[in-house]
Length: 362
Image 1 (cartoon, rainbow, N blue to C red):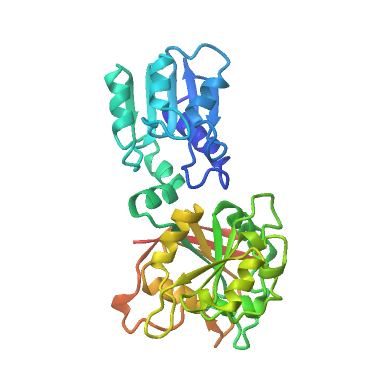
Image 2 (image 1 turned 90 degrees about the horizontal axis):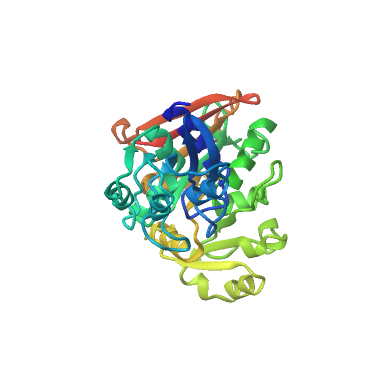
């Protein structure tokens, strides 16, 4: 087994922690001896043992002299779990192959230095781009103290998310909707604007796949949404956050929502009454551990986030229909072509009857 093959396997293992380890990174580890896998492990749950410890625990023979292949630099400090770098040293691992250096300043470079100081051979950067993609949310939250923001749109070929009469269910196919539910389970929260909540009355739950239920976030500046919406009445009300203006956050309506178990967060607004979300995003990461948010609409919310340069990743589900004159995904706010955001397409594939395109900013 080559180093690249072993790292690819470690990435597969790390993905098993999706939806369970946030705001920690997803990490996988493979132990090799004479090209054979003798142990595997991954970080399974926030606060649980790290991937390196799991792999050593699961090893089928003595790990002394083995090579550890790990997607992320082994930690060198004690937090909820002890130092993985120290563990590898104690167990006489001879070679550590690392996918990427950890952006966490408590670890960054320190784990590698500690291993090398102990006489262990260290190789860094094997499948580095793939490992960076695996833990892109972790890297952003650590370096910016902001959650990673994803936009998801189900749209027509001509860029509409609803007809002129605001009919939107369903533009995309069942296959696309199933993928969306898997995405909901992957990210920490899903977010919608007031109009989407009012028109579609979505549950924003994970239904077509197995997975954890994310937080549900709805914007309602003046707290005018009816209390009968699914978001406010179903079994997941305690995982629902309403973001409103600071004045509304102290109103009787806010008190009623809180009494039903819903979180209400006050937010600054601009001169046009639009919520300024940057600081509230930071608050949700710090107070709720929400490291990633998938925004599912609507147009005004997506346009606002785009203008504020807050979207890191775009997921387009494009149906082979034309709605001519319908509701545009991002509205019409760009006065010149020069101001159009430049994206890099990461993947493009068929999804049921639709096309599924993923792109990142920059």
